Length: 383
Length: 123
Image (cartoon, rainbow over all chains, first blue to last red; front, side, top):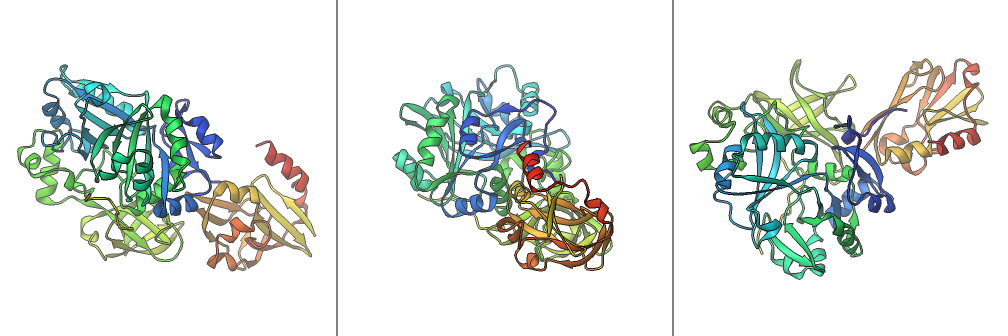
């Protein structure tokens, strides 16, 4: 028998680092794998059970491998607008937005969350950003190169990041911090719990309601223990994080998004508002405008798959004899109860409902271009 | 009936020239939740070490090798409807396929249960 963990093949040249909660994960029975340069928990009880628990209750994910950055200084908004296609000037305090870093050709270098701080959080910095773990050092290098000297970027590698996700996440967190009950999707705030400052946003990567909590690394264990002592909450590994985000239709950087693709084809045009499209002034703008005008050559789409055989990353997609695309993420979807996939398909074949075939180990399996998300989002959009 | 084990985490029950092949409990535990098993067709012939089946867990696909040479006489059709049987009963009802053994001497050098337990404990 041979095989490898699908999610565990990135960046393994350097010795793996340990997360602040490394010992905590092992004590909880986690199986650890190398991912994004860290030893990370891939599962505790099993991916299916953890996936279902998160959809029904609340799961605690350690995402401390991700890069947490702050930006401050004179002209920080204008400087960041040169790097990000999103509306930073219009970003109000305590609000968060999805954005990305683009290269000169408009290729996606990373996708990220950006928010405006307030209440003096993180030493009074202006902007907080969370970037992917596997790309964080490249991102920092890119941004340092492109930011003016007046803007100071700080990598907060002394902060851990925990995500609490699921329909019971709201009541669970409110039982520790009652003031979080009123938060809505993509809202952030500074809270104090047992004397520990927590920067919390109502967002996540599962399609469920939930939170991402930035906590000083030294206090992460205290918080993780308090959360997991609640009846709604169990620790959840990377494996379920991947199946949950795939069902939610959310792209995974390095797989569904790469420097070879751009925003419009990736169906992420929502992250670039009218003003930014019209005014431009960000790296990669020309590609965005060209793809808006002429259409992208290929698009990121969802695929439902007939039968039970999963189609995984790298599987070629066919329309008849013609190869028209490739699966970029795929696997069995526990909540859907069937295999699903995300892939890039050339333009004439990417309309919803298009019947295609995916080749898995020399066999063609039937697939249909499907709307995403595969499982409806349940964000808390109104108080 | 004798049971043999391979260092690829397969078990083999041998009775009357027929080998029943499955993956070990240790293997299913490592793979996690199994969602699909691709089994060989009856009549297929394998040399020792050939890819004979594929087991798909939530996170990855893994090959299962023919632990010895032979011809497939039966595949476990119960796994088509219930792949999770491999998780719940890997070493009995979760068997994969039966081979008509081509060369009994290939069984020499495989591990018995005690040796396999030792092998796993050292991993």
